[in-house]
Image (cartoon, helix red, strand yellow):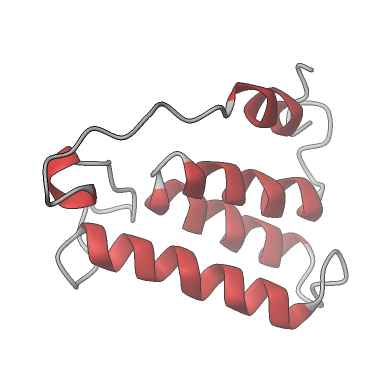
Length: 107
């Protein structure tokens, strides 16, 4: 979807949610910023939902980085198994390919 409509704020907003579910919190926050810069009025969603989504993703990023925003300098972070699962238990794989294909326009 983003490939076909790169200036679609709603598509960036939805893709941010996909990235959040994949543990790519820095990339998700970047997509939210892109959505907001394309449509500052947030007409593509309820503004309170946007704020809630942004706070949730920022919380995930903070928790992953040990309580502060760190990464590679551009806000991007990567998922670490020791950070995301402190008890060392394996999680079952997530079924996210269809969501990713939808968000990227290849479904």
